[in-house]
Length: 152
Image 1 (tube, rainbow, N blue to C red):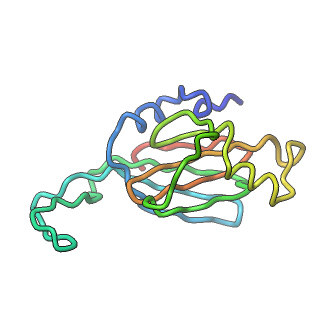
Image 2: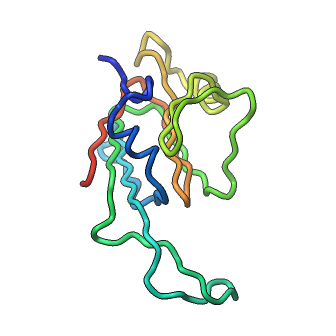
């Protein structure tokens, strides 16, 4: 099966990477072999608030009418969630995409390859997917492309 996310041709991935203000809605593991990540497009609040001592701030919020995506990773090998303010990408890492990325070379992929017994023979060639939101960076290493559903 061709992984259209890896080639950056998946229509939903193209749409998501062209959208703005994705926030993490929910991250959950199911039955120890399925990771589900829900993200939603946040919109500007209708009324300004005082946030952290700054007046007149329009916070971003997920509303019932917000666009949503569900990314389901079956038989994942590893995943990591990093608060957005601490996430970084090294100059030696190679990726395509924006909000949704796939890495052909990354420190996280090297870490998983060195720290687990997963190989190209089992479960198969490992791929590093990354979901970037305004609040988190979610890294997933798996040998299976994710299932992507728009507007869950």
